[in-house]
Image 1 (cartoon, one colour):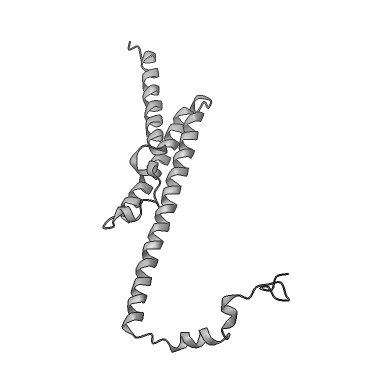
Image 2 (image 1 turned 180 degrees about the vertical axis):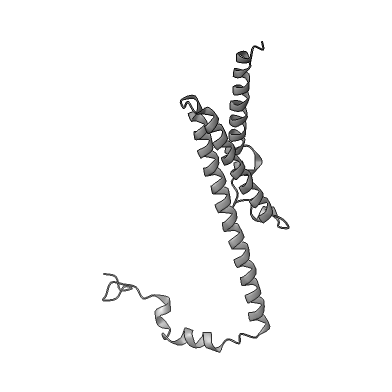
Length: 157
């Protein structure tokens, strides 16, 4: 055992040197109507509001990604399921829900500096480079190929 540790084997923490009630007394002595405290309260409110918006954007981004992936997996089942039209209708409804969430993200960012919130939003969910674009192209391809496959049945060549 070293001489620094003492007999108990534990080092003393820095805050152990202060009396236990001193911090409470300091808290009660602060003038809550001072201009400095009013400024800090306004900063606190602003930061809390910004943090709440950031968290809402993170949740919306995750919801967009999850719903897009679910819809893509739904569209993958179209070849093995005999109810193709039902799957296409369901995927269209889910795609509309994804579009609504993207609109919610856009509404959250109105009047805001987007660069403050760019890390809250996954790039693929809004730019059209991720699951949203895959979903749209897959849905379009399946609807289009369904139309093409029914053309020979109608007698058109």
